[in-house]
Amino acid sequence: MKQSFQLKLGQSLAMTPQLQQAIKLLQLSTLELQQEIQQALESNPMLEMMEEGEAPDDDLPRISEEDLVRLHQTSNEVTDFSEPEQRSESVDDWQEGHIPDELPVDSQWDDVYQAGASNTSGQGGDDDYSFDSRNASAETLQDHLQWQLNLTPMTDRDRIIAMSVIDAIAPSGFLDSSIEDIYQGLAAQWEAMEVASDLDADALELDEVMAVLHRVQQFDPPGVAAHDLRECLLIQLNQLHEDTPWLLDAKLVVSEYLDLLAAHDYKLLMRKSDIRENTLKKVIELIQSLNPQPGSHIEAEKTEYVVPDVYVSKKRSRWVVELNPDIAPRLRINADYAALVRRADTSADNTFLRDHLQEARWFLKSLESRNETLMKVATAIVEHQRGFLDYGEEAMKPLVLANIAETVGMHESTISRVTNQKYMHTPQGVFELKYFFSSHVGTASGGECSSTAVRTMIKKLITEESARKPLSDSAIADLLDQQGINVARRTVAKYRESLNIPPSNERKRLS
Image (cartoon, helix red, strand yellow):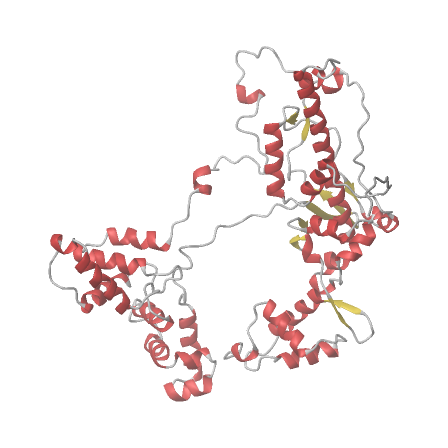
């Protein structure tokens, strides 16, 4: 085949750097957006942060319920990333506020200028704020036990054994290894290391390890260093005062009939233990007051705070959607540097300033586009879920990404980016935008009901059930069917498990 050159016209979609930047900012969370803005401030001299109390050029968008209906007529919108028109900015457009050259003698610096670094996280100043206390690493269970070991009078030989026992304790408070494994590891260490030359040269005995283990089990938190749940509960019961009511019965149930108690087989438990029902209720209350995982409160997870991106409030019987003004610092273009670009020369300095000015404009436009898109999506969600805002989860309507994409005239992938790690503050609480999207189940009238509403109904039915005769999944499905909601038993079981609710045999209680 003879090779030849041909010209062919065609159209293709190109991802310009500006479009890539807009998409990137759109899918960032609040924390990631603050980091991106901080990086832009450090790399681009044309960008600067507006001071607190300074009036912004444009107020943040606000959409009321009157504007909700208009979204249905919104046509497909494409963000305009065309090159902005070149125009000469006057120095007055970029002029900053007047700063006094001299201050009165009796004035203080803090009276004119705000002290401290700029706050980009939206959190107000707090006199009790401590950077070290908020960012210090949390104390582990091993640290807590090691601190008590250092305060306990003990021989060097026993201290080495205690350290091995502490190292074998899991974050839950239970031993990861059996006492035999700990003993064998120490015995091998006794022979291989030179520790025997400094300590007692006698061979290590299993009884020594057991004795040190019992001492460690008296440390705080109660129940630590136990092999299993039964031993953990018995350690805690043994540390209670001997005059504690129903203590002996509780020790009997834990040591002999813990399996029956876990299976909620109260009839067989009362018959074997010879404990009456009224007494058994008190015994169970005493056992439930114990901690099944002693190490859980030592290594508590660090609390993560969520900053909402949008606020929804009812004003004059209308739902109003507003952007959170504290999610990102307000930016503008530096007036002094922008004034230097007015020169028409082609020097390297002028090219540097002109390029960064263009990047700053694109960055500010991408931020504005992000806010507008977030407002459109949040407003459309509020329009669909008014019932949830008024009456709660039971009034939640089924909603998918395609519904919002059709309403605002955008692609589903864009809606997915907007709703990811974005939060809405409502009178019902703070929710991620993805929370308002749920599948549906059919109703007897041929309509649809949100799966979130069905979960709420299931939770309500279980809350109101009899403690002696909990509702089975089939019974819950029948009750929902009576309300006109067609849900299979397996669907009820799936929703119940998603709510972390145990099955009916494990929910049985003595009333």
